[in-house]
Image (cartoon, rainbow, N blue to C red; front, side, top):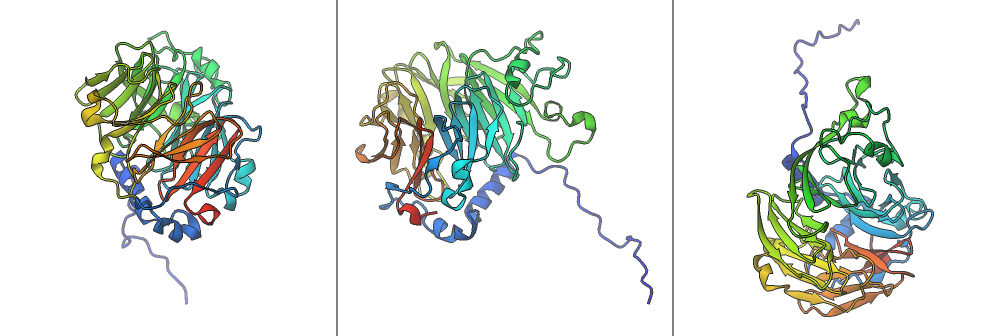
Length: 441
Protein backbone atom coordinates (compact mmCIF):
# COMPACT_ATOMS: atom_id res chain seq x y z
CA UNK A 1 0.00 0.00 0.00
CA UNK A 2 1.37 3.41 -0.96
CA UNK A 3 2.38 5.73 1.84
CA UNK A 4 1.53 9.41 1.63
CA UNK A 5 3.90 11.74 3.41
CA UNK A 6 2.36 14.19 5.82
CA UNK A 7 2.35 17.82 4.83
CA UNK A 8 3.45 18.72 8.35
CA UNK A 9 0.57 21.10 9.07
CA UNK A 10 -0.46 19.14 12.13
CA UNK A 11 3.02 18.93 13.63
CA UNK A 12 4.05 21.12 16.54
CA UNK A 13 6.55 23.81 15.58
CA UNK A 14 10.11 23.25 16.67
CA UNK A 15 11.24 25.25 19.67
CA UNK A 16 14.18 27.48 18.80
CA UNK A 17 16.64 28.32 21.57
CA UNK A 18 17.86 31.86 21.21
CA UNK A 19 20.77 31.30 23.62
CA UNK A 20 22.11 28.86 26.20
CA UNK A 21 20.84 30.88 29.14
CA UNK A 22 22.30 33.69 31.19
CA UNK A 23 25.06 33.36 33.78
CA UNK A 24 22.61 32.66 36.61
CA UNK A 25 20.92 29.91 34.59
CA UNK A 26 24.22 28.33 33.62
CA UNK A 27 25.43 28.49 37.23
CA UNK A 28 22.22 26.79 38.41
CA UNK A 29 22.67 24.04 35.82
CA UNK A 30 26.28 23.56 36.90
CA UNK A 31 25.23 23.24 40.55
CA UNK A 32 22.53 20.74 39.60
CA UNK A 33 25.03 18.64 37.64
CA UNK A 34 27.47 18.78 40.55
CA UNK A 35 24.79 17.76 43.05
CA UNK A 36 23.10 15.06 41.00
CA UNK A 37 25.96 13.62 38.89
CA UNK A 38 27.26 11.17 38.11
CA UNK A 39 30.18 12.98 36.51
CA UNK A 40 33.05 10.70 37.52
CA UNK A 41 32.15 7.73 35.37
CA UNK A 42 31.10 4.30 36.54
CA UNK A 43 33.00 4.72 39.82
CA UNK A 44 31.09 7.89 40.72
CA UNK A 45 28.87 6.29 43.38
CA UNK A 46 31.67 5.47 45.80
CA UNK A 47 33.33 8.85 45.31
CA UNK A 48 30.15 10.85 45.84
CA UNK A 49 29.23 8.84 48.92
CA UNK A 50 32.49 9.96 50.53
CA UNK A 51 31.75 13.66 50.67
CA UNK A 52 33.50 15.94 53.13
CA UNK A 53 31.87 15.35 56.49
CA UNK A 54 34.28 17.01 58.91
CA UNK A 55 35.31 13.68 60.41
CA UNK A 56 38.58 11.84 60.27
CA UNK A 57 39.11 12.43 56.54
CA UNK A 58 42.51 14.11 56.31
CA UNK A 59 43.93 13.56 52.80
CA UNK A 60 47.41 12.47 53.87
CA UNK A 61 47.82 9.03 52.21
CA UNK A 62 49.87 9.22 48.98
CA UNK A 63 48.36 8.01 45.70
CA UNK A 64 51.46 6.95 43.73
CA UNK A 65 49.45 5.34 40.92
CA UNK A 66 47.80 8.70 40.19
CA UNK A 67 50.89 10.89 40.55
CA UNK A 68 53.41 11.70 37.86
CA UNK A 69 54.92 14.29 35.55
CA UNK A 70 52.42 16.48 33.72
CA UNK A 71 54.60 18.03 31.02
CA UNK A 72 56.63 16.28 28.29
CA UNK A 73 59.63 18.45 29.13
CA UNK A 74 59.10 18.28 32.86
CA UNK A 75 58.68 22.03 33.19
CA UNK A 76 58.18 23.54 36.63
CA UNK A 77 54.50 23.68 37.60
CA UNK A 78 53.25 26.79 39.39
CA UNK A 79 49.43 26.81 39.62
CA UNK A 80 46.61 24.26 39.69
CA UNK A 81 42.82 24.14 39.87
CA UNK A 82 40.21 21.35 39.96
CA UNK A 83 37.29 21.56 37.54
CA UNK A 84 33.91 22.08 39.28
CA UNK A 85 32.92 18.47 38.54
CA UNK A 86 36.35 17.14 39.64
CA UNK A 87 36.83 15.44 36.27
CA UNK A 88 39.96 17.41 35.34
CA UNK A 89 42.86 19.28 36.88
CA UNK A 90 44.34 22.33 35.15
CA UNK A 91 48.04 22.91 35.83
CA UNK A 92 49.90 26.07 34.80
CA UNK A 93 53.63 25.82 34.12
CA UNK A 94 56.66 28.08 34.10
CA UNK A 95 56.93 27.55 30.33
CA UNK A 96 53.63 29.31 29.60
CA UNK A 97 51.64 26.11 29.04
CA UNK A 98 48.46 24.90 30.74
CA UNK A 99 48.03 21.12 31.01
CA UNK A 100 44.65 19.42 31.46
CA UNK A 101 44.76 16.13 33.37
CA UNK A 102 41.78 13.80 33.11
CA UNK A 103 40.97 12.38 36.55
CA UNK A 104 41.59 9.96 38.03
CA UNK A 105 44.92 9.82 36.20
CA UNK A 106 45.53 6.16 37.02
CA UNK A 107 42.52 5.34 34.81
CA UNK A 108 43.80 7.69 32.09
CA UNK A 109 47.50 6.74 31.87
CA UNK A 110 48.17 8.79 28.74
CA UNK A 111 47.34 11.94 30.68
CA UNK A 112 50.15 11.19 33.11
CA UNK A 113 52.81 11.34 30.40
CA UNK A 114 51.37 13.55 27.66
CA UNK A 115 48.26 15.44 28.83
CA UNK A 116 46.45 17.86 26.50
CA UNK A 117 48.26 21.19 26.62
CA UNK A 118 47.03 24.70 25.89
CA UNK A 119 49.69 26.95 24.34
CA UNK A 120 49.04 30.59 23.49
CA UNK A 121 51.18 32.43 26.03
CA UNK A 122 54.85 33.10 25.55
CA UNK A 123 57.31 30.86 27.38
CA UNK A 124 57.03 32.65 30.70
CA UNK A 125 55.30 31.84 33.98
CA UNK A 126 51.57 31.21 34.24
CA UNK A 127 50.24 33.41 37.06
CA UNK A 128 46.78 31.88 37.54
CA UNK A 129 44.35 29.28 36.15
CA UNK A 130 40.64 29.21 36.92
CA UNK A 131 37.56 27.30 35.72
CA UNK A 132 34.13 28.69 34.99
CA UNK A 133 31.19 27.35 37.01
CA UNK A 134 30.03 25.18 34.11
CA UNK A 135 33.52 23.73 33.52
CA UNK A 136 33.28 24.73 29.84
CA UNK A 137 35.68 27.67 30.02
CA UNK A 138 39.16 28.05 31.45
CA UNK A 139 40.90 31.35 32.19
CA UNK A 140 44.68 31.69 32.36
CA UNK A 141 46.89 34.71 33.12
CA UNK A 142 50.57 35.02 32.32
CA UNK A 143 53.69 37.06 32.95
CA UNK A 144 53.75 37.86 29.23
CA UNK A 145 51.12 40.54 29.84
CA UNK A 146 48.05 38.68 28.61
CA UNK A 147 45.14 36.50 29.68
CA UNK A 148 43.46 33.74 27.66
CA UNK A 149 39.91 32.40 27.73
CA UNK A 150 39.76 28.79 26.51
CA UNK A 151 36.88 26.57 25.38
CA UNK A 152 37.66 23.23 27.04
CA UNK A 153 34.20 21.69 26.79
CA UNK A 154 34.89 19.40 23.84
CA UNK A 155 37.02 16.30 23.54
CA UNK A 156 39.56 18.04 21.31
CA UNK A 157 42.25 20.31 22.69
CA UNK A 158 41.68 23.85 21.38
CA UNK A 159 44.43 25.13 19.12
CA UNK A 160 43.77 28.75 20.06
CA UNK A 161 41.91 30.60 22.83
CA UNK A 162 38.48 32.11 22.35
CA UNK A 163 39.83 35.39 23.69
CA UNK A 164 43.43 36.54 23.92
CA UNK A 165 43.26 39.57 26.21
CA UNK A 166 46.29 41.72 25.45
CA UNK A 167 44.91 45.28 25.47
CA UNK A 168 43.31 47.37 28.18
CA UNK A 169 39.94 48.27 26.62
CA UNK A 170 39.03 45.82 23.84
CA UNK A 171 40.64 43.47 21.32
CA UNK A 172 42.93 45.36 18.95
CA UNK A 173 42.06 45.72 15.22
CA UNK A 174 44.30 42.79 14.37
CA UNK A 175 43.01 42.26 10.83
CA UNK A 176 43.76 45.86 10.00
CA UNK A 177 47.24 45.36 11.38
CA UNK A 178 47.71 42.49 8.94
CA UNK A 179 48.09 39.70 11.51
CA UNK A 180 45.78 37.37 13.35
CA UNK A 181 48.33 36.70 16.07
CA UNK A 182 46.99 33.27 16.93
CA UNK A 183 49.02 30.67 18.79
CA UNK A 184 52.43 31.02 20.42
CA UNK A 185 53.96 34.41 19.85
CA UNK A 186 50.60 36.08 19.15
CA UNK A 187 51.02 38.38 22.14
CA UNK A 188 53.84 40.31 20.47
CA UNK A 189 51.85 40.76 17.28
CA UNK A 190 48.79 41.85 19.25
CA UNK A 191 50.77 44.34 21.29
CA UNK A 192 51.78 46.18 18.15
CA UNK A 193 48.15 46.83 17.23
CA UNK A 194 45.82 49.31 18.90
CA UNK A 195 46.81 51.94 21.41
CA UNK A 196 46.10 54.98 19.26
CA UNK A 197 42.62 55.42 20.79
CA UNK A 198 43.73 54.74 24.35
CA UNK A 199 43.46 50.98 23.89
CA UNK A 200 47.05 50.36 24.94
CA UNK A 201 48.59 46.93 25.56
CA UNK A 202 48.90 45.74 29.14
CA UNK A 203 52.10 46.90 30.76
CA UNK A 204 53.97 44.25 32.71
CA UNK A 205 52.52 41.02 34.10
CA UNK A 206 48.87 40.15 34.22
CA UNK A 207 49.10 38.93 37.79
CA UNK A 208 45.75 37.22 37.92
CA UNK A 209 42.51 36.77 35.97
CA UNK A 210 39.32 35.39 37.53
CA UNK A 211 35.65 34.91 36.76
CA UNK A 212 33.39 37.16 38.81
CA UNK A 213 29.71 37.47 39.70
CA UNK A 214 28.45 34.07 38.47
CA UNK A 215 30.87 34.21 35.52
CA UNK A 216 29.18 37.32 34.16
CA UNK A 217 32.43 39.30 34.27
CA UNK A 218 36.20 38.81 34.28
CA UNK A 219 38.43 40.54 36.81
CA UNK A 220 42.04 41.14 35.84
CA UNK A 221 44.96 42.59 37.81
CA UNK A 222 47.55 44.60 35.87
CA UNK A 223 49.66 47.41 37.26
CA UNK A 224 47.96 49.22 40.16
CA UNK A 225 44.46 48.66 38.72
CA UNK A 226 41.85 45.95 39.06
CA UNK A 227 39.94 45.86 35.77
CA UNK A 228 36.37 44.65 35.24
CA UNK A 229 35.54 43.21 31.80
CA UNK A 230 32.39 41.98 30.16
CA UNK A 231 32.85 39.35 27.47
CA UNK A 232 30.84 37.78 24.67
CA UNK A 233 31.41 34.24 23.44
CA UNK A 234 29.42 33.04 20.44
CA UNK A 235 28.44 29.39 20.60
CA UNK A 236 28.07 27.20 17.54
CA UNK A 237 29.44 27.65 14.02
CA UNK A 238 29.91 31.18 12.67
CA UNK A 239 27.12 32.65 10.56
CA UNK A 240 29.51 33.89 7.88
CA UNK A 241 32.99 32.98 6.66
CA UNK A 242 34.24 36.47 7.54
CA UNK A 243 33.46 35.75 11.21
CA UNK A 244 35.44 32.52 11.51
CA UNK A 245 38.39 34.23 13.19
CA UNK A 246 38.09 34.18 16.98
CA UNK A 247 38.99 37.87 17.12
CA UNK A 248 35.79 38.69 15.20
CA UNK A 249 33.41 36.23 16.87
CA UNK A 250 34.38 36.72 20.52
CA UNK A 251 34.84 40.05 22.25
CA UNK A 252 35.67 41.65 25.57
CA UNK A 253 35.17 45.22 26.75
CA UNK A 254 36.46 47.17 29.75
CA UNK A 255 33.64 48.28 32.05
CA UNK A 256 35.64 49.84 34.85
CA UNK A 257 39.26 50.15 35.97
CA UNK A 258 39.70 50.55 39.73
CA UNK A 259 43.09 52.10 40.50
CA UNK A 260 43.87 51.06 44.07
CA UNK A 261 45.73 53.94 45.78
CA UNK A 262 49.07 53.17 47.39
CA UNK A 263 50.78 50.15 45.79
CA UNK A 264 52.96 50.35 42.71
CA UNK A 265 51.15 47.29 41.38
CA UNK A 266 48.66 44.69 42.55
CA UNK A 267 50.11 41.27 43.27
CA UNK A 268 46.92 39.19 43.53
CA UNK A 269 43.23 39.32 44.39
CA UNK A 270 40.32 37.05 45.24
CA UNK A 271 36.60 37.24 44.56
CA UNK A 272 33.50 35.03 44.50
CA UNK A 273 32.31 33.48 41.25
CA UNK A 274 29.93 30.78 42.51
CA UNK A 275 27.47 33.19 44.16
CA UNK A 276 26.43 36.82 43.77
CA UNK A 277 28.81 39.03 45.72
CA UNK A 278 30.25 42.42 44.69
CA UNK A 279 33.23 42.08 47.06
CA UNK A 280 36.81 41.67 45.85
CA UNK A 281 39.95 41.65 48.00
CA UNK A 282 43.14 42.95 46.39
CA UNK A 283 46.72 42.78 47.63
CA UNK A 284 49.33 45.39 46.74
CA UNK A 285 53.08 45.49 46.46
CA UNK A 286 53.12 47.75 49.55
CA UNK A 287 51.99 44.80 51.77
CA UNK A 288 48.43 46.15 51.95
CA UNK A 289 45.04 44.47 51.56
CA UNK A 290 42.08 46.40 50.14
CA UNK A 291 38.45 45.26 50.35
CA UNK A 292 36.55 46.68 47.37
CA UNK A 293 32.78 46.84 46.86
CA UNK A 294 32.07 46.91 43.13
CA UNK A 295 28.36 47.47 43.76
CA UNK A 296 28.81 50.62 45.84
CA UNK A 297 31.98 51.69 44.04
CA UNK A 298 33.97 52.29 47.20
CA UNK A 299 36.76 50.80 49.26
CA UNK A 300 35.32 49.24 52.41
CA UNK A 301 38.56 48.54 54.23
CA UNK A 302 42.31 48.91 53.87
CA UNK A 303 44.73 46.85 55.94
CA UNK A 304 48.29 48.15 56.00
CA UNK A 305 51.18 45.77 56.66
CA UNK A 306 49.01 42.65 56.44
CA UNK A 307 52.26 40.64 56.23
CA UNK A 308 55.94 41.40 56.75
CA UNK A 309 56.41 41.19 52.96
CA UNK A 310 54.03 41.66 50.04
CA UNK A 311 51.10 39.25 49.79
CA UNK A 312 51.52 36.91 46.82
CA UNK A 313 48.35 34.80 47.02
CA UNK A 314 44.76 35.19 48.27
CA UNK A 315 42.07 32.53 48.47
CA UNK A 316 38.43 33.23 49.39
CA UNK A 317 36.45 30.31 50.81
CA UNK A 318 33.48 29.54 48.54
CA UNK A 319 32.51 26.14 49.92
CA UNK A 320 31.19 23.16 48.00
CA UNK A 321 27.89 21.38 47.45
CA UNK A 322 29.54 18.27 48.91
CA UNK A 323 30.43 19.65 52.33
CA UNK A 324 28.54 20.84 55.38
CA UNK A 325 30.40 24.13 55.84
CA UNK A 326 28.05 26.97 56.86
CA UNK A 327 27.30 29.85 54.51
CA UNK A 328 28.77 32.27 57.06
CA UNK A 329 32.18 30.77 56.31
CA UNK A 330 32.20 32.71 53.04
CA UNK A 331 33.63 35.61 55.02
CA UNK A 332 36.92 33.73 55.45
CA UNK A 333 39.95 34.02 53.20
CA UNK A 334 43.61 32.97 53.22
CA UNK A 335 46.63 35.15 52.52
CA UNK A 336 50.14 33.95 51.78
CA UNK A 337 53.35 35.97 51.64
CA UNK A 338 57.10 35.47 51.33
CA UNK A 339 57.50 35.99 55.08
CA UNK A 340 56.74 32.28 55.61
CA UNK A 341 53.27 32.87 57.04
CA UNK A 342 49.85 31.65 55.95
CA UNK A 343 47.08 33.70 57.58
CA UNK A 344 43.32 33.19 57.86
CA UNK A 345 41.15 36.32 57.93
CA UNK A 346 37.50 37.05 58.68
CA UNK A 347 36.08 39.86 56.56
CA UNK A 348 33.67 40.85 59.32
CA UNK A 349 36.56 41.73 61.63
CA UNK A 350 39.56 41.94 59.33
CA UNK A 351 40.71 45.25 60.82
CA UNK A 352 41.50 43.42 64.07
CA UNK A 353 44.00 41.16 62.29
CA UNK A 354 44.06 37.51 61.21
CA UNK A 355 42.13 34.93 63.21
CA UNK A 356 44.68 32.16 62.55
CA UNK A 357 48.34 32.10 61.55
CA UNK A 358 50.23 29.07 60.21
CA UNK A 359 54.01 29.23 60.03
CA UNK A 360 55.51 25.73 60.14
CA UNK A 361 56.31 25.75 56.40
CA UNK A 362 59.14 27.56 54.59
CA UNK A 363 58.33 30.26 52.03
CA UNK A 364 60.89 32.96 51.25
CA UNK A 365 61.43 32.85 47.48
CA UNK A 366 58.59 31.30 45.44
CA UNK A 367 54.94 32.48 45.50
CA UNK A 368 52.78 29.67 46.88
CA UNK A 369 49.13 28.95 46.14
CA UNK A 370 47.31 27.88 49.36
CA UNK A 371 43.84 26.38 49.72
CA UNK A 372 41.07 25.77 52.26
CA UNK A 373 39.34 22.39 52.23
CA UNK A 374 35.62 22.40 51.34
CA UNK A 375 34.81 21.12 54.84
CA UNK A 376 36.76 24.09 56.30
CA UNK A 377 38.68 21.81 58.62
CA UNK A 378 42.04 22.01 56.83
CA UNK A 379 44.30 24.63 55.30
CA UNK A 380 47.06 23.49 52.96
CA UNK A 381 50.05 25.18 51.37
CA UNK A 382 53.30 24.35 49.65
CA UNK A 383 56.79 24.79 51.02
CA UNK A 384 60.33 25.25 49.77
CA UNK A 385 61.54 22.21 51.74
CA UNK A 386 59.93 19.95 49.07
CA UNK A 387 56.84 19.16 51.13
CA UNK A 388 53.23 20.26 51.36
CA UNK A 389 51.84 21.21 54.76
CA UNK A 390 48.36 20.39 56.02
CA UNK A 391 47.11 22.45 58.98
CA UNK A 392 44.10 22.11 61.26
CA UNK A 393 42.08 25.33 60.95
CA UNK A 394 40.51 25.05 64.40
CA UNK A 395 43.73 24.63 66.38
CA UNK A 396 46.23 26.11 63.89
CA UNK A 397 48.36 23.00 64.49
CA UNK A 398 50.23 21.05 61.84
CA UNK A 399 48.41 17.86 60.84
CA UNK A 400 50.88 16.34 58.39
CA UNK A 401 53.84 17.02 56.13
CA UNK A 402 53.25 15.53 52.69
CA UNK A 403 56.45 14.47 50.94
CA UNK A 404 57.23 13.03 47.54
CA UNK A 405 58.39 16.05 45.54
CA UNK A 406 62.05 16.59 44.67
CA UNK A 407 61.78 20.39 44.60
CA UNK A 408 59.69 23.18 46.12
CA UNK A 409 55.91 22.65 46.22
CA UNK A 410 54.27 25.72 44.67
CA UNK A 411 50.52 25.02 44.61
CA UNK A 412 47.89 22.90 46.33
CA UNK A 413 44.23 22.30 45.48
CA UNK A 414 41.44 20.35 47.19
CA UNK A 415 39.09 18.08 45.26
CA UNK A 416 35.59 19.64 45.50
CA UNK A 417 33.90 16.23 45.80
CA UNK A 418 35.77 14.11 48.31
CA UNK A 419 38.87 14.27 50.55
CA UNK A 420 41.73 14.54 48.09
CA UNK A 421 44.61 17.00 47.79
CA UNK A 422 46.65 17.72 44.65
CA UNK A 423 50.12 19.26 44.96
CA UNK A 424 52.28 20.67 42.16
CA UNK A 425 55.94 21.57 42.31
CA UNK A 426 58.99 22.91 40.56
CA UNK A 427 60.00 19.32 39.78
CA UNK A 428 57.28 19.26 37.10
CA UNK A 429 55.07 16.70 38.82
CA UNK A 430 51.59 16.56 40.31
CA UNK A 431 51.02 14.35 43.33
CA UNK A 432 47.74 13.29 44.88
CA UNK A 433 46.89 12.47 48.49
CA UNK A 434 43.65 11.04 49.82
CA UNK A 435 42.16 9.61 52.98
CA UNK A 436 42.10 6.17 51.32
CA UNK A 437 45.18 6.06 49.07
CA UNK A 438 44.92 4.54 45.60
CA UNK A 439 41.68 2.80 46.46
CA UNK A 440 40.20 6.26 45.96
CA UNK A 441 39.14 7.63 42.57
